[in-house]
Amino acid sequence: MKLTRRELATVLAPAAALAGTQAAAQTTPRRPPARSDALLDAARARTKANGAVLDEQAAPMDTAPAFQFKA
Amino acid sequence: MAAIPNDVFFASIGELNARLLAREFPAEDLARAFSARLERLGPQYNALALPLPQQARRQAIAAGKDIKIGRLRGPLQGVPYGVKDVLSVAAQLTTWGAKPYAGQVFDYSATVIEKLDSVGAVLTGKLSMVELAGAGGYGSTSASLFGPGLNPWDRAHWSGGTSSGPAAAVAAGLVTFAIGSEASGSIVTPASFCGVTALRPTYGLVGRHGAMTLSWTLDKLGPLARSAEDCGHILQAISGKDAKDAGSAGKSFYYTPQYVRPLKELKAGFAPVDFAERAQPSARAAFQSALAALRETGVQLVETRLPQFPYGPVLSAILGSEAASVFESLIASPKVYDLADPAQIAGLQAALEIPARQYLKAMRLRRLMQQAYAKLFADVDLLVTFGRSGPAPNIELPVGRAVVPPEGSDPGFYGIIQAGNLAGLPALVLPCGFAGNLPVALQLVGAPFAENTLLAVGKEFQTRTDWHKRRPEGV
Image (cartoon, rainbow over all chains, first blue to last red; front, side, top):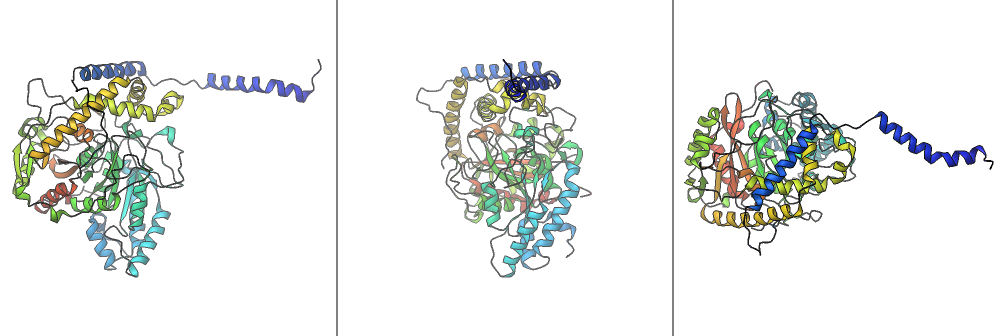
């Protein structure tokens, strides 16, 4: 099959664009700031501890969530 | 151009407006002088987000014309102010203090800015803040696109979070008043650290359309200014129904402290342990003197206990869940790593994983809190404690959490900032002395929509003290 240069460009353009994105991603890696894993673990641990505290609290079944305030 | 004397930069709203009406100087010259001062000194405290001198000049010219023909719009007419960069100003940058939003522009202005515009106030600039108002919890004073907020009383110390710029700018006389925001301490803390008077209004009293959303059920906008009276004038201008804010209470506020019951009939609940033990040693003498001055107003101080709830965990669950939902697309994107504070990033990521069960339990406990505070305010008219337990920390120190009272000890009003925000209660911060060279402040907390009670007590306190009139050396 013979392709004109224009047809060839049309076929290859998406792949080239994708490769370009990947190349850009490889050359500018996004790295979490230092110690972020430890910080994330600590934040998750705080969430879990908070949840445990809330679990200990009793609320009657008919207590609806609140966010409206009236005088 | 008329010469603007230095004392004008520290004048109250009432004084400034009177001098404008007396034609001592035109509003345009006043705006120009404040704009120049904000641009010159704002960066010294990392307080300036965006100067708006052209817009200020236009507004000031309009205010001046109105004053000239007697079209008076109230005490804020011609008075320069600034806003925390959570608020959108049409066609201007609104960064929310965060690099991922550094190029953000809205085509509309926030409701509070429109309201202030309608009474002739002059917006001279946008002021710095902790990135995303501390959405994920932050560990460093540097958690901002603008760098750490530096305290005008001592630049080695923090101006507080998250309304750092508004508090520093008012303290340094760069604006006459500013608008800040609070979900949990973001007005009370910087006002206390910078020695300015501030009001956190009842949830829903001030419309939030055009303000960055951090938490739908906790966000509030309020004034930082030179006195309780100034806060009253500002609140009157910015309160009222906001059809574009689902949380709007649809109520207006009229500053009428003269109609509050005689102060000697008011009961203020307090916990002696707050001032004797929980306050930092360097601040105790100032707090004790302030309590004595408060007694002299006639207000009865009565020992009170706060309803006991796990305020911190409840607030964290609600604020974390709502903030993570608001910023879900940022958290999922690599841009989250453009935030300045690693703890903030981790906090946001973890908050996205908070179970719905935990959020709902927190919101149900919040309902019980509201009921408990309604009961408490049947016995007392207001609560009194410190704004923060001590003065502003050094900027090199990590942003700490409050010291938890030891188990079995009297907790005093520990958790009052979270409690007040969870129950939607108003709070007034009153400068009340110094610890070393840094200011400290009292905090008055009231029942929902009882702002006039707080302001009446604050006004009387400030007729007997002059802490709110002190200004940092060299500014």
